Length: 64
Image (tube, rainbow, N blue to C red; front, top):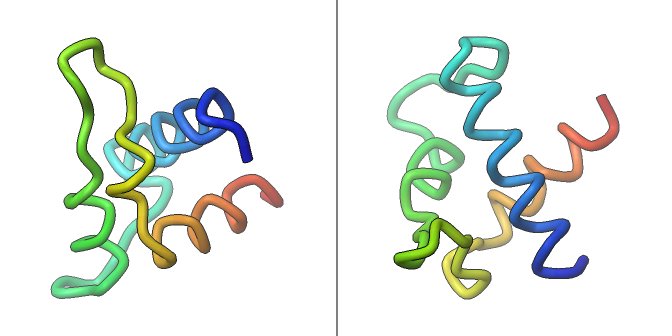
């Protein structure tokens, strides 16, 4: 996955969570992992902050 694809998918996932389309029970390793995703001063996702839980969610969202 390229950095551009990662950026697009993380933003889409965060939008789905904010809209209530994707929900998590709290506390959840998935919600915590998504909260730990960092963005730089330009609003770009820091790929190093995207862990295996977020990547798994991105795969599910991509398939939906």
